[in-house]
Amino acid sequence: MLVKAFAKVNLGLFVGNARTDGYHDVHSVVLSVDLFDLVDVEVKDANEKTAEITVEGCDFVRQEKNTAYAAVRNFLTEFNHSDKSVSVKITKNIPVAAGFGGSSADAAGVLFALAKYFGIDINSERMLAVAAKCGSDVAAMTSGGCVEVLGRGEKVKKLSVDTDFNLVLAVGESCSTAKVFAAFDSVAQKTRDDVSSVKEGLKNGDIKRIAAAIKNDLTLPCLAVYPRQEKFICDCEKIVGIAPILSGSGGGVFWLTENVLESERIFNLLTAKGVKAYVCKGVANGVETVETDIKN
Image (spheres, rainbow, N blue to C red):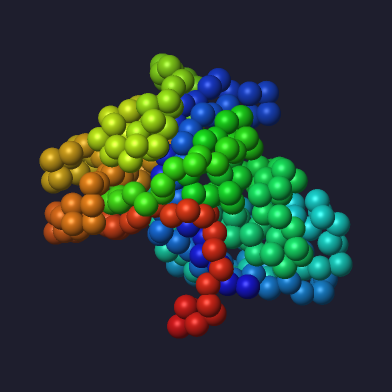
């Protein structure tokens, strides 16, 4: 089964103290956007390997370190399918280590395909629990659309809002999530946990209100660890005339725009200066099936 696994942006991210399990409690609003990886999943009779992961477009991710690998193992264990093995081919389009959830999207794509194959509700509590075991963003991206996220990422609530937002994404320096969270633990001042203004703006489709309300607790830690990312953000603000918003732990940033024409204007300004950028729209799902001829 071939699926599109969509990227995400964080429309606000509040981070709590480190937990005893090594994770952090978070409160975020996550929006799926139409930049996607292709995830091709084939279920086979069991052989000596539980999962075989092939990644095209990213040559430095080892199979066992890929979140998709964890997704296969966790799914087969949870649903007692030890008689099966899974082959996964991932074609990367989502930038790696950019805060757009690329590896989590791949895991969500695997879980979506396996749930379809075995006739399991992708939004069931059991499936979302499996997703949460794979990584903090995976449950949100398995559910997809626009969701509110709590806990370490395992508590996901779908928001009844229009997801048809226009965005521009741009890619700065690759950033390690672990290093950014370590910097957060050592130096960051936590902001007041409140996504109510973002949620209200989403209900009304008020782009300016949403953008003004977005806060990301990982912004300052990211810039402390990666000073070149701070320069990138400053340069982007000079180019566009509007400061971008950091997504997740970085190093990708984004702008919410009023319409496609505004997105294209910002995209053209950025690419003229050599910045890697994408024109995107919000989407209603985290993963969807596609026709097999999309591979050609």
